[in-house]
Length: 169
Image 1 (spheres, one colour):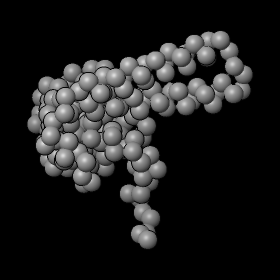
Image 2: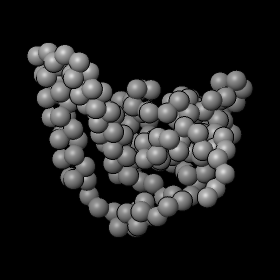
Image 3: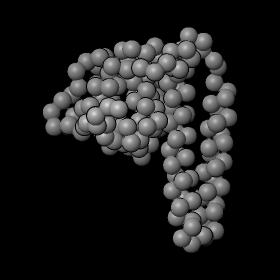
Image 4: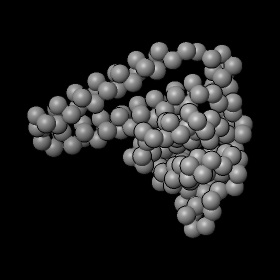
């Protein structure tokens, strides 16, 4: 076993959500044009972890300034909480080959994860007292998740990026 340390904190607890969020933001930096488009439809509610929410702000600033993805973070106290996640994003952006199609796929997966969290939260609150409004919202969210999954299935396969996305880095 490995000793637990500060790096084992929120990212490890969030597991797949953290990895998806880091890959999405790395893809946005690697493909600035596609990244800017994807980030227009994203706010902090799409991110499960505080570190990646803070890193989202840094990535948006970087892309808005038109800086290269491998430039140092804007820095200062602003970087604080998101600095570790941002560093992970920079490393990932340099290691993995991203395309605009991959950024689109990651954007859809990020949306699917957020909708899944919203559905889970709604199911928990429904147990306390089911209302017609909650049932309608649940049906709407489940329909949205189906649409996202259909959109994911429609994305063309890119052989070389599929292989790199399957490897653990």
